[in-house]
Amino acid sequence: MKNNAPSKYTFVELSFEKLLNIASSITLFLIGAIFITMFHSSLQAIREFGIGFITGSQWDPVADIFGALPFITGTLLTSFTALIISMVFSLSISIYISEYLNNGMFRSFLKSLIEIMAAIPSVIYGFWGLIFLVPLIRNLEMKIGVMPYGVGIFSASLVLAIMIIPYASAIIYEVMSMTPKDIKEAAYSLGANKYEVIKNIILPYVRTGIFAGIFLSLGRALGETMAVTMLIGNMNIIPENIFSPGNTLASVIVNEFAEASGDLYFSTLFEIGLILFLITLIINMAGSRIIKRMYRPAGEK
Amino acid sequence: MEKYRIYKNRLFSAVITILTVISIVPLIYILVLITMKGIGSINWDFFFNVPAPVGEGQGGISNAISGTFLLIILASFFSIPVGLLTGIFLSERAEGRFSYWVRVSADILQGIPSIVIGIIVYIWFVKQTGGFSALAGGISLAIMMLPVIIRTTQETLNLVPDSLKEASLALGVPYSITVLKVVIPAGISGIVTGILLSISRVIGEAAPLLFTAFGNPFMNMNIFKPVSAMPLIIFKYAISPFENWQNLAWGASFILIVFILVLNLFSKFVTEKWKTQF
Image 1: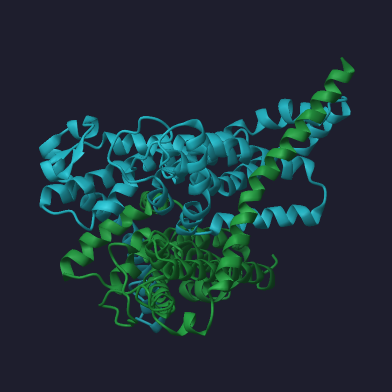
Image 2 (image 1 turned 180 degrees about the vertical axis):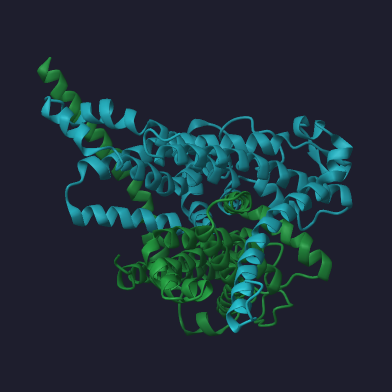
């Protein structure tokens, strides 16, 4: 190349090559910068409180007492409750669409409905929950005799579950349709009925896929911000029961970031962001690793 | 024994059907409620006025609609070129340590909670420049769009057969021209779909805008000043106790869903009409 007379093309070629490299470096650089920024901004809080930040159960910015345990509990509690509720339904929807629906039009209607619902913004779910769900839950709470806040862990989990259902069913449906037709047909030809085929053939076959779907949905639920902030009641306490108000890692940032006075307070909110980031990172990585292993053809390592 | 099996089968299909119906009902109900309440609060003022103060009629959300457009334009301006080029890079050079780490970075970026992106951009821009701005909001949204564009571009271009590229190179066409004039046009439908879906992913995001674009009760088109956006006013007005503000939030929710629906339908249209058959 170097011995050639410099033509117009060599210049274009070299700059194209450079452009591709620069653009790709930006993504790499972005991740590095995000990690460094998060760590650097939370350094003061990490130095001040050490591991006690995660185990501390009191959050009182006025007295400079910062413990993130209420928010960690709140996040895990809402996410897992939502996950448990939504899994029952998303599994049913996926089984229904892939095994019970023969009508093409109704099937594509259901699939597009799920697609639309997955695209609806979190604030709108939160708004709907606030207007429609909160009064219902307040009534329920009065009937069973707990404090009728209306908002709280349960309301947040319920809306979160409704938000996860479309997302999880899309993933589970996808892996279910990967079950080879011949093993299903073989089972039917041996006289198995639908229930037996689903229980003994399909579910064992897609078990890892469902597992991955659970992980990815969990990753989404953990980082979900707006709907949860609107419905969780925003109280900095460790929730006593499923109906009591609380706060999550994400919602406390929304509520207190703008009014955080003082460097230490500010830094603690970044450490909360860092904790949230690391938890979702681990969950997402596990989920996508399982999915990748599933899509790899058999025999390949 | 045989009867027991049949009953079990029937019971199972009944349970599955009932659970499906139960989960579909709230989904449909949300759509219906927003459509009804939303259409009810839309009028001429809604599109051409800014929100009225409490107790002085309803006003409109022109500031938020224009703000959302401004933010999307800014976000696209930053994310589309970088995302496309990175996607091309990853599909052309799949092997190597550098490509591996770029791919991992894009994956990590995809999973970062949106509120975390918001506070990072706050540190990078708002704290440095000393004020909230549309620019900072656009950059947060760009960071969220980037991994989607990278992923879809890479996946689409991976489907373009090598023979096409080889034919072009064999004719003596330089590599860069081959990529720009042969490979990309072959995958254009997937690339455009990816861009549309990335926009539909961020257009309703409020969390990354809370501490960057911040919101603004007035019309603003200056990228260095705070700007309002539809998800921001939905959040602000939904938690307010005033009925005229809540009506604005219903209207904004409806318009936002219509936007997202149009983006999704358009991307389906693009996929079907522009698709190149190999």
